[in-house]
Amino acid sequence: MHTVVVGTSGVTVSDVLAVARGDARVELSDEAVAALATAREIVDALAAKPDPVYGVSTGFGALATRHIGQELRTQLQRNIVRSHAAGMGPRVEREVIRALMFLRLRTVCSGRTGVRPEVARAMADLLNAGITPVVHEYGSLGCSGDLAPLSHCALTLMGEGDAEGPDGVVRPAAGLLAEHGIRPVELREKEGLALLNGTDGMLGMLIMALADLDTLYKSADITAALSLEALLGTDKVLAPELHAVRPHPGQGASAANMLALLKGSGLTGHHQDDAPRVQDAYSVRCAPQVAGAGRDTLAHARLVAERELASAVDNPVVLPDGRVESNGNFHGAPLAYVLDFLAIAAADLGSIAERRTDRLLDKNRSHGLPPFLADDAGVDSGLMIAQYTQAALVSEMKRLAVPASVDSIPSSAMQEDHVSMGWAAARKLRTVVDNLARVLAIELYAAARAVELREGLTPAPATRAVVDALRQAGVGGPGPDRFLAPDLAAAEAFVRDGRLVAAAEAVVGPLR
Image (cartoon, rainbow, N blue to C red; front, side, top):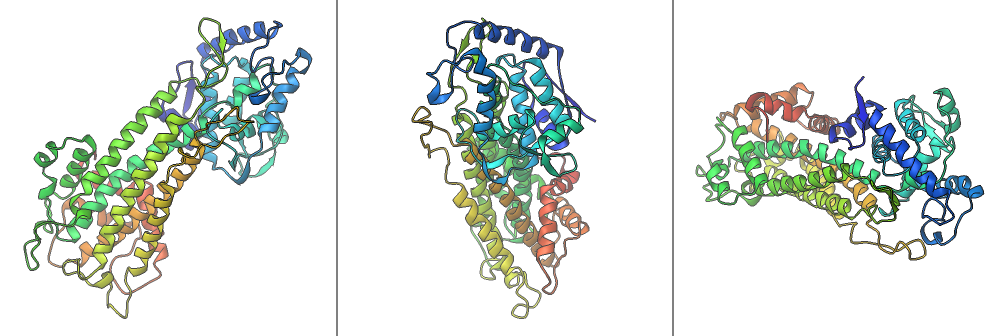
């Protein structure tokens, strides 16, 4: 099994994906263990002094003015976890929780939090045992960390609350820890606070969304190319010299992908035949501009994620010179903004794909295709309601594209009076990404059928390979009406798991 070693300098995107989605094992480097021990010595020294230090010998948030005596500090750390584990609503997905736990461990191992090595080892043991704390949808405002979600994870470390075992069954955490030989952690000064004061949930969901969207943006270039062929459009608008005069990197990459996919097509260039067109519709002609702008958004979001991966997010933080200082680095604004931005770009990509699908089904705009791509229009409805489903998905994506990050709401007796709502931005982005895969699957389904209905015209080798692979995956082609939902589900899986991109790349090489 793949093993990820966590050091003091952070982890990579591939590390996060390996642990969250691939159940990779986690180990601490010797460097990390040494850094943990050094930082803990500093915290212990401060704890022994009479002067109050936030998170070490004081209350939290609006209660930070109270000095806590040594006899109550273990109880203080235990209480913050219990009281903050106040999430409600549906359970959060296992991959999100694993990403959150791993990223919190990554910050702990930076040596900037003052957590003892044994606590970090217990965090790694929990991941390696496949124990997943029960975390609920609601409870994070994206500031002072993803407080409730991280608290539910810390609660499991303490042997309290409920968790899911590697068998998928939810039961009391105490029993799960005992089964795997993990001793519940008794938290000391600052440790409770350090386990729940981070942006790890937001960051984990951002990293997974970026991975999924990388595949989906390539998929969108493929479905757009298929639709262009099916509509007998022109590929002249994809010429590199046209995109060089507006040199947005994403636009150039998208146009290059579509041009490569359409090389050798016998379907393109017929826009001047029986029903002459000076230009194709925007949804066809401007596909690289829209998808390209989204790609550039991905690039910016990836930069933010990489910066966050190199960060140690905690409050207070142990500095290299030995000072322990309060700060505001837990604020989720950098992540919240790009999470919202990605949702906007993905919603627009879904919107333009839906417009191409609608054009394929409309006999007045499809340039010779049968109404709704039906076998016997009137007797058969064809793909009429598949487009309804696609429209419903796009409509929801548009609603979810409304930014969460502008909706700050004060909390903690006005101490935390401006929050990022980054967790909410990440949660709705996950739905947007899921819907985008479905929208593109419907465009793929319609465009593949339309290409096959163009009798006597030969598609490009790459798009032909895509249609062939789709059919081999069990997705049916043209014909009389049938139960459509299974076909659409199979098309969605074909897009989501990367087989669509793989089929195209087998002919044209790696897409950009």
